[in-house]
Length: 471
Image (tube, rainbow, N blue to C red):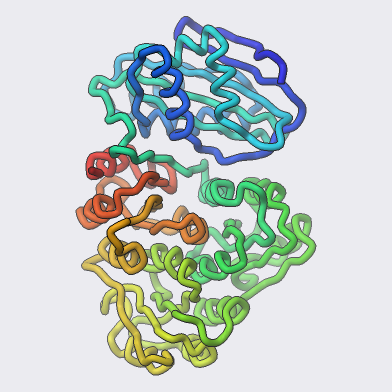
């Protein structure tokens, strides 16, 4: 790596250019790592630590993505200030450092931090009079340049350092549902994957049923438009370099045109589908699970929240998710349960979504005759019940994923990632933290919380509320 080329925008802002020859796309968000590395440098010169601040982290994501999209390596301090003002927080100062590099087989945030530290302008920002920070990086699809950003802020009230005791909050988000799914894929499948699953981002059933299958095969779920392959999905498939792609759902969900486009990214492209969402879920199960599985999960096919949280647990426990109606066990689901002969069956959600009659009918297909129910007072309470079913011990879980319970796209791709990390998926509203979720976070006491989606899906206020809820 050559010496960085420096560019000073003001006494508060500095930039480094890290030059080499080839870049590898990496996760779009790495705020906790950046802040930790900055705090190590601050401590070495007697400066107090800064806390990881959600709004600084999110602005860093937006700035990195903007530079990667335009290949314009420049500061946009007006944008940073406008975003801080729009957030509604009280702040007294801010600074930005940026960098780009290419040519390394892997990305190492400590390499970027060291270059920033060696440059006087960057050094001044890192040790400046700030109490919060965030960071991010993104890669240009045109030039393979990797752009790094850190935003430092001085909040009127200092944030807790270490965010939630020893907990770090990291947003995994993109400009669209397709970008967010790709970001989740990059988070877990850093070195590629043997298989990738592709489902429509316009509806939920196929991707939800596909989550345990993706975990079993060791690949992500990516989202597509019905009639066209989004650029973010195409770029992630190119990076993953899978030998096989599985399309979840029929041609009304993912057209033949998209299937043809997918053939450019893998030697084999398959489709697992059926005449209805219930048939498709059964087809996914048949293609992935052999008779005698330890458990099979049942979720309503008419709404998404229970299966969002259930996908992570089903994948971790090695069982499929099958779909039912509230008052009926569909023939395709009954046939698949008869083939599977699971030891036990777990119903996701209360009687308002899956009746006792359906639970009882399903129980006849379990070899132990057991069909238990995981449910809470609402979708948020149900996500807690699902979390406790696997992470119920005193040790809790070191990692938690949080998704909005008000819409499905961001959480669709989270199931396989959460199952493999592993950690539960908990649901929140865009602007409030349900008390049941606050209590579960306190019980789990995680080291890392991944917030799936941008501020419109889960606001900075909710992130701050989660921070405050942690011990």
